Length: 136
Image 1 (tube, rainbow, N blue to C red):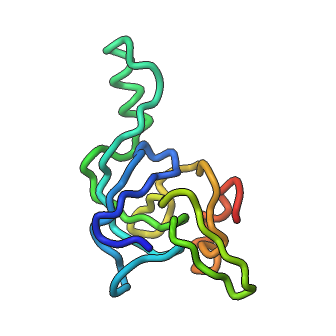
Image 2 (tube, rainbow, N blue to C red):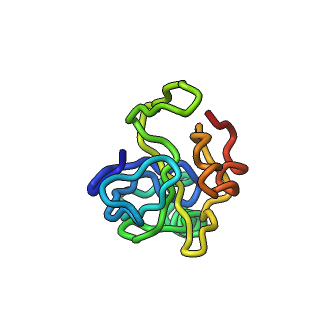
């Protein structure tokens, strides 16, 4: 269950590492897997070596599509809270994770790292499910 101030790992290659939930869209209290939320990027992911100042600044800025402090939309793909599926199986993950999307609903990143819950596809995010390496 994701609510206000929840910290989430960002599992795509958009350049963000950690995001904080600031709003759950179209819900009263909390978001589950497949729900759309608004996040603020708290920590950037660093790409490449940062030893030489001239090349690292250009390569890092080119690889990062988002910066620290940006406000973006995201889709929840993993939650620590266990939930029961209609077939009776109980599923819970090790962390809370999300994928950044633009206002049109397209993922910002081109690759996803890690497992994605199967409920994402059932809620209309089939593009995210197709980018994921593994679904559970």
